[in-house]
Amino acid sequence: MMVIDSHLDLAWNAVNWNRDLTRPVSEIRASEAGMKDERRGHNTVAFPEMRKGRVAVCLATLLARGSGLSEPLLDWSSREIASAVARGQLSYYQIQERAGRMRMLKDWPALKSHAESWSGLAGSTGESLPPQPTPPLGFILSMEGADPILSPADVPEWWEDGLRVVGPAHYGPGAYAHGTGPTGGLTPAGVELLKEMAKAGMVLDVTHLSEESFWQAIEHFPGPILASHNNCRALVPGARQFSDDQIRTLVKRGAVIGAAFDSWMLYPNYVKGQTDNSLVRISAVTNHIDHVCQLAGNARHAAIGSDLDGGFGTEQSPHELDTIADLQKIPPLLAQKGFKPEDIEAVMHGNWLRFFESAWGKRL
Image (cartoon, rainbow, N blue to C red; front, side):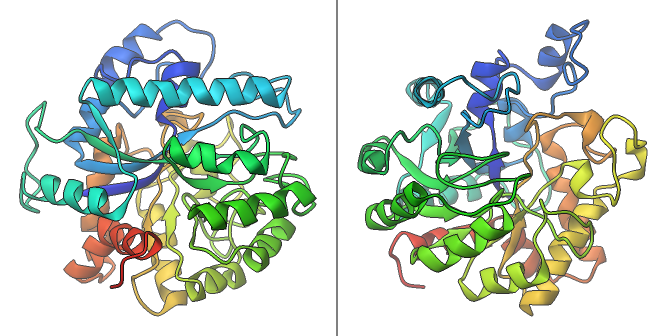
């Protein structure tokens, strides 16, 4: 079944982690064997496995922070440097486009045509795609943490470069909002950023916003809203997850919420590096999908936003998942929970198609 994954840090893995995503996952793992960082040699995402798993479209990120948290590969000593790093990541996507491996999708006609090209390759029988199918991998350009946008006045320039989805903050305090971890809301510049985003036609990603920032963003932003990779606080407590009130509010705004695959977001009281990861199963992801559907009263607002290789690998993913191709294990698990075939297709790709058709000005 065709998959749309609403959160993959592809360029961050390539540019910051020095991973050649054109090579199979197994080769990347072998190239990292012996590296001291425990996250090395456990990656799950590369272009061949995306093709195998029929991940036809993703929201592909630009990720560079100036939060002051000083985390290697993520934080930079100035926002100007962070902006330059993000520009380098954008260049990576542009290079992949020129090589015919990827295709940037900037509007509904492009997304619709691309999805149709993938839908025609194989049925929903689980058959594998050939190693190099004709269509490239489609992506919608997003930004996780808006620090690289040096001024709200720069939004039109980023729009011209293809940026369509922006999350104002990541971890820690950002230039525009407080993200995961600290308390606090939008900054005055953050309010201006939302105004410029709405004017340009950008989509707001509320993932990673602190509680206060979330509610202020909902109030200030009149345009389309999504949550690219977020799970449910009712199942796994913690400020990184959404409360039921937040989920209901997003449903009312027509949002779609992508379920994330990071183990600490799937297993209560998970401690990174300590909890036995064999306790975390892929079925935990479907529990979060189902919870969103129960709150919504339908299956129109839940989707996949895996965040695979978002700073972790198999050591911190559900233990039955070896590569991103294993997203194909989700449909039978949803069927076991009683989801109808049309609702499974909605979760795997249909809800994102409908969302962007609406967000990009097309009537349903």
